[in-house]
View 1 (cartoon, rainbow, N blue to C red):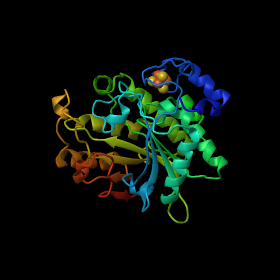
View 2 (cartoon, helix red, strand yellow):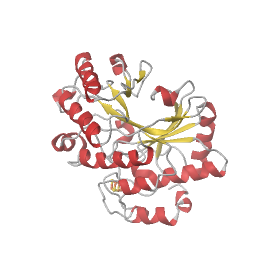
View 3 (cartoon, protein in one colour):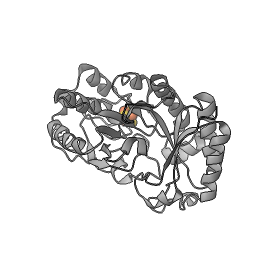
View 4 (cartoon, rainbow, N blue to C red):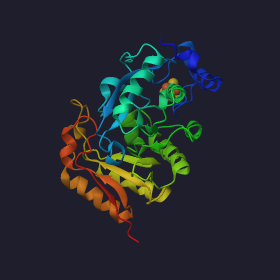
Length: 318
Ligand code: SF4
């Protein structure tokens, strides 16, 4: 166990004592060592801190983002590209012995970055994320904070992050209950993710705010990964965003799906085709979306997000 317990606020301890950080609402006392679906106690578990240049260009720019990859996840999607660190049946990776060493490593990497700090899969470790941010502030370090989650978040918890997170970067994977049960071990992924993204939208609206140097200051970017053979599901997701949120939000439509290993779902053991992707992009325009990142299908070769071939579109039709 690291020394993180002494850094938690009373409020954070309270939520860890009866964990409802995500919609699974396991009600486990993680402070006492109990573990819920994410199979983590109250310790900080970070698998990797690194400079990452593969996020959307508006985030990465030239120097990249300092990304903190948390171990384990509250979703367990069968096609997860980060399965080596997100698999809850494995012992969580924790590379750093103390909170101080985590913050020192982040400080070092931030200096080489665009001064943007991205937390990847933070949902089940939000209290630890908050500790890191507070400790950085104590050192007079104030990066822009990116909350990069699978979207399966608790809106009540997100409310507490209103003045903490600058940029929300959630996934919206699917909407159908049968698909989310089949691939992410929960029937309500679509329903709960929609509620979570509505809360993010309430906080950030549809505008991406930038400073005088065009550096991102705040906003919401919704990511959607097109799965092979599931074009109709992707259309349903875009349709839901258009009707239930707004066509003025920024979407990132990703074509990079690659099976992480041979999966027990034959339809996923392939890549998305250019035709499928092109049809989804046409649908994006048909619905009236006009802000987003589109990907070249050649990025399927990458293991982690690689947006080198992206183009940012901002074509207000009016
Ligand atoms: S964060 Fe983990 S323990 Fe808490 S509700 Fe979600 S899956 Fe359960």
